[in-house]
Length: 120
Ligand SMILES: [Cu+2]
Image (cartoon, rainbow, N blue to C red; front, side):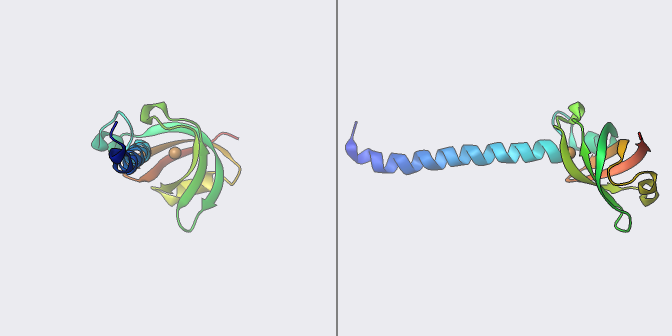
């Protein structure tokens, strides 16, 4: 192998690997914000149901942070995330630490809570 090629190949390889890493991270983020295996439009109109524990409630701001179970239809793992309540009155149905079953729609990077039922 030509020794003079090595100094140019190493940075090129580094950039290549870095690029791969960046792509993987972007794909991962996309899988969560727009849904995997479902089109954007489909994901936005369809409501999904899962269960979770209320981590935080912001009744004035109309949002709720839920540690939720996986959502196989969206390829979402279990995680803690924020939802915006379509109707803030829904947030009166639960409390921090409460166990809930809820319906939501994923609209881009925002998730809208459309219904909620206390399980405890
Ligand atoms: Cu999530």
